[in-house]
Length: 212
Image 1 (cartoon, helix red, strand yellow):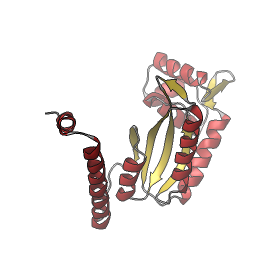
Image 2 (image 1 turned 30 degrees about the vertical axis):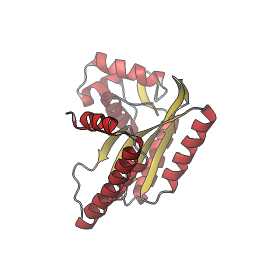
Image 3 (image 1 turned 90 degrees about the vertical axis):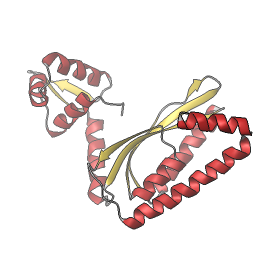
Image 4 (image 1 turned 90 degrees about the horizontal axis):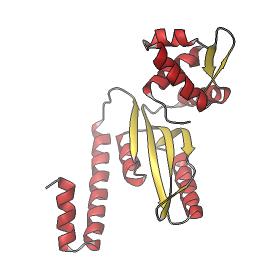
């Protein structure tokens, strides 16, 4: 599913309830008619919605309706409270190697007991300079704060969005475990960086890192 603007997300939520005219959408979302039509045209281009009848009503495309139903079914059984959307970038020197890496990451995410996967979208590999690049867009829920640490350090998402909840309460054990993991990983990275850099390179890196 393509990236949606805030307006398009609002439109999609409305159309998930029932088909609506552009006027009804504009009124419910408090948008101008011109802005509403601009967003609807973009959603038609990407086949997220369809239009029919007179007066013209817009509704979600059937494949989108099916995806929403699948997500709701997963959500009914999902015990995890933290929901995220993240983008994981992957690069490789060969297209086939890149595809292999993407599939391995996808499988690792799906089999990780700390995550519940709602949706994974894979972008087609593209040549970017000397490397082939792609990304996975992942919609998932996460068991606890320690699992977030695991996601950030092992999968290194380039972008991440918190979908819910608005507030979160951590247990002392969860916070302690996450901090221990972060400390161990940071020290492991620091040791590796120190081995690869000479003193001047290390000083330059530290200066850039801390903005000094």
